[in-house]
Length: 337
Image (cartoon, rainbow, N blue to C red):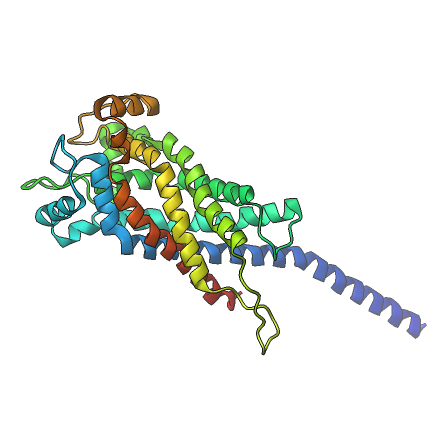
């Protein structure tokens, strides 16, 4: 009798332990996935902040050339002249005007872009049954990047508009800067032009995010397929060593240049739409195509490419640092997972 009781008790105990283990497994798995997603978002956000701060002077010059709000109406101003004009009117710190707003926008934007790209890629690996040690087809790398870009843009657009208004106008000598500080810019824009003004230019921005991020991440994926990393085994652990960081840096730089060059006209249109209605800007556009039509009629096709050279010069180091920093931060944080 004692033997039967003991058997029943041990069976119930083992069954209970098994049930508890099974019920805790999904929770444990979900917690691990959430922690990994958070880690990737933080790494992506920090990588974007490092890259943007390093290249903000080039970004400022590019935006002034793009918007034409540099005080020299009707003339195409050279990069050197714009640089001198910023220093003369705003001092050295003028080269980083809008960087605070940029960082507040970039951290969540890049956090979403990089983490969502990893998740979308993981989803496509699962759907297509592609082995994780192989590269995804190019069109899926493009699609993952494009979807991640659209997701990030939708979430953070008002911050992008505020940054555009701060960086896209040059301070007039002897006058106070109207737009300074991201929160103040958002508040002033909503107060003077209404809440919906915070989404001026959102259509070309969201539509442009698809090809921009798609081309950027797609180029990186294509380069990794064309130039596969040599498999090296660690003599101590026997595991395959991770490829050199320099691969991500070089491929990221190339991806940024390609994306920036191809999507630049759309970027010019969205900047012009963002600035309309702001103080000192007289031009009014009735939507995306009206803006394209008026710019072309008044200035010709070359107007869409104002600042394209400085943008290419900026994009190469910007995206190279982004991809390199993201990879470094991911590897450093791997040990904490």
